[in-house]
Length: 119
Image (cartoon, rainbow, N blue to C red; front, side, top):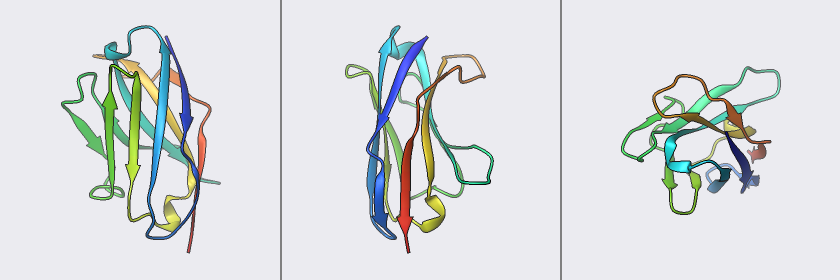
């Protein structure tokens, strides 16, 4: 498995931007698809964006399409989430997760980073 550490969260005004980073250690990073998830208070965790092992395929939740961009640098063992045009409803704890390429379940998770968007 890989160990994941998120950073980059914080407080931002609506319309602003943040970039989240997730640094991985352990087994070969390029073997893993990566994802960003979020959980707001009182709500279930939801998938925000995913990127496959090579970076060639990405997925976005409808709520973030056109505003968020997921990317990765395999040499640096890091995945990013660039978040633009942030809205108060984007407020949540954001988690980075990893799954072996070709599998369904994300088995490795970071500790999460808080993103708060003020109106």
